Image 1 (cartoon, helix red, strand yellow):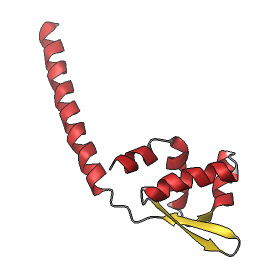
Image 2 (image 1 turned 120 degrees about the horizontal axis):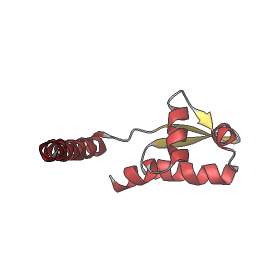
Image 3 (image 1 turned 30 degrees about the vertical axis):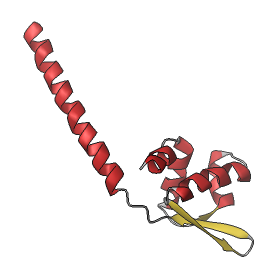
Length: 101
């Protein structure tokens, strides 16, 4: 789960995942909208790959990237649990603030 959150912590990596959600792309195609070097994108893709969020395959001279098979259920459950805790805290704070007014 740490690898997943680390991979998702960077806006460029999230953008890469959004792009790959529309279909496979080469490293070059992924680099264009971000204005990054090919090496820069390869580093980002490598982090996404280690988290199983992206897979790559050599196709001719290009490296084709696709969304990976990562199971986001564990990360989603963690986020949901903490979201509920914070909502409860905010509800209590709101009640307190209303009582003090």
